[in-house]
Length: 228
Figure 1: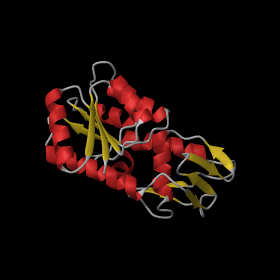
Figure 2 (figure 1 turned 90 degrees about the horizontal axis):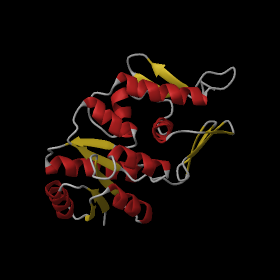
Figure 3 (figure 1 turned 135 degrees about the vertical axis):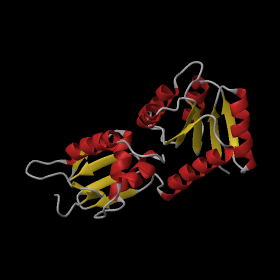
């Protein structure tokens, strides 16, 4: 049975979320504060977390950032009445996997939960992924390139993992955004460019270009043959 942690201080919203999740057969546990959520997330085993951004004791952005800093990688669906594009981008940058705006349709919420669950099952965090000189420890979230350790932030790690699962293939920006950030709106040029740029610089080696190539008008490609 899927274990869901519902973090929501609005009783009506919590009732809607819990009702739909339980209707779908999920075991949903509810807390209403950030501190309770942090304790549950660090001590319990949840498959997914729904997280209200505006909590009485802690901003949802700070909470998800704290979880990621402690290597708690449970998928997080952020839910908020803050609906501007910048708000959604801030939620995703903080470590959220998807962002849904209030008021919301329960059917859409259920669909987003299923998408996040499906993606986590397709890409379980276990084992090693090796492509050329690149080694990715999916359980410990560590990376080595040509034998040297590479320190990555959470989104950089997920971006590299996604590219490494499709070596040599051109991956479009929208697909990257949906699979790495988990949200379905027009991706910001700056958001993707910043993360690709940082990741590219971390994989550069003296005398060799980064193996992440930009294919103009199409997307990006991890080329460990032509790059290094």
